[in-house]
View 1 (cartoon, rainbow, N blue to C red):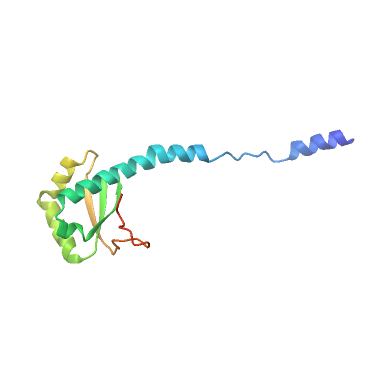
View 2 (view 1 turned 90 degrees about the vertical axis):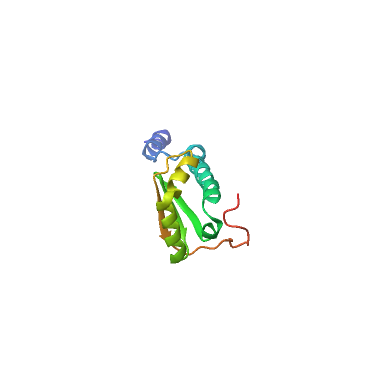
Length: 126
């Protein structure tokens, strides 16, 4: 075989580069899916601050919102009990009225959180 034939065979046996740039699909994901979830959680946080009494709200942190379920972390058992009583007593209905999305349930979970981040800034400030 001459050099040209060897070169042709060598090129044919090389693996095709099937990599694709990730920038555009990632930008679309951020724009369409994550941005919507952030807006929903922001709106929920505003409604939460308006509706929940401040004495209880300062002991809670909105942890997530998925499939109509808002997960709220509460730092003490006493505040968790008070919040669950408020939710059963009509607070859930008030949250549903004021929130434009589909809020089906509020899941209250125990946990610890800090009101400031590592830099000393408020954790949930927007």
